Every structure is written in C-alpha cells, then in structure tokens.
Image (cartoon, rainbow, N blue to C red; front, side):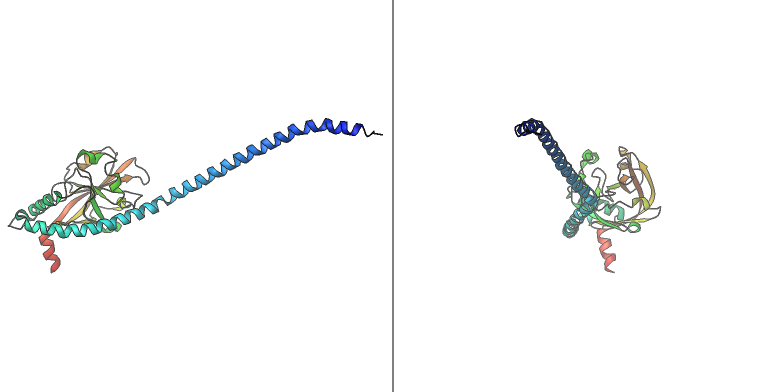
Length: 267
C-alpha cells in the first residue's frame, strides 16, 4: 500500500523532467510556424511575379497603343505644318525637276525639323496587317547602342537615325519589337518576295517590294549600309530571343512627291 507521504515525492520527481520537453516542443512549433510564414510569403511573391511576367505582353501592348494614338495626333499636325513649309520653299516646288530629285529635296527639308521620337510616316504591310507610325531614332553612332532607341521602341517601329530618310538615300532602315509592346514586327518572317510595303510621309508616298529575308548576328551592322536596297526592316529572331536578327530587304517600286500625291488623290 502506498502511503500518502510517497505520492508528492513521485509527482515532484516527474515535474522537472516534463518542463524541458514542453519548452523544446514549443520552440520546435515556433520554428515551424516561422518557416511556414516565410514559405507563404515566398509563394505570394512568386505568384505575383509570375502574373506580371504573363501579363507583360498585354500591358506593354496597351502602352504601345496609347503611344501610337499620341503619335498619330502629332503626325496630323506635323503634316499640315510641313505642307506650308514646303509650299513656301522654292527648292521644293516643281520646276521640271525629276520626281526623285523633288522627293530628295523634300526629304532633306523634312529631316531638318525632325528630332528623336517625332513621327516620320505610316508603315503599312498588307500581308501581315501592319499599319504603324514610324518614329525618328537617335542620330549618329548612338543609334547602334541597344539602349539608344530602347524607350522609343516601346511606342512602335523606330528609324535608325544614322540611315537616310526615304528618298534622301538608301537604305531607310527601321527596327521594331517582335514579341512585346504591340509586337509590330511579329510576323515579318511571313513576308515573301514581291510582297508590297507602303510608307506614307508628309512629303511623299513610297511603295516598296520585298526582295528577300536573311538572318544575321546582332552585331552585324553592315545591314545598315547601302547595298542597293531602299528599305531594310530588322527585328529579333527567333521569337522571345535576341540571339539573331531577322532582316527584310526591299526595293523601291515608286515614290510620289507631296504635291503630285495631293493632286492624284483629288482626282
């Protein structure tokens, strides 16, 4: 039989052994809770990041659309203003000079007022349903720097500023995004020899025909040199990669000066 005096002794002996176990268990649960909290936070961050990445093409396209609308308004005002400048300039009036020379003079006059970001004209490619305003890029060697026209490219195709304007020389070279910011040049690989390309500027109307497409390394700037092609379009390839550049080479079919275009359009 157990005496009443022995029961407190047993309980007092058990109590010190239970306390360390209880503290260890509490610490273990606290650590698990902290780890779980950080895991949940990391999962939330990854979920948000993934959403932003997946939605990037959509909101970047919206940004490009807004910029194109802004450029279109500027282009209309610019065209009206340039028509008045051209009419007041004796060198750009028709005096029996060939159409190509008149277009060259108009291009030179137009170029004097251009600055980076200004709209040059509407680039239209029927086969791929493209109709975008081309912006003037930065001038000189800065145009070869990948960061030179980066901000402008978010608003649409950009003219390499170190190449001449259409009609002033060759080639008129234009770059555009392939997969983001509205992806204006997404379908350039679908172009075939003979496909028409149209460019309407405030000083002349140009019609081109595709000759060929090639793929080059990103550092091959020789594509911007005069090789006998009037229009050169460039974009990244393959899609979602910047490892190479897709080049579309086109020849000039016809150019119509500002005054002649206005008269032909009124008939």
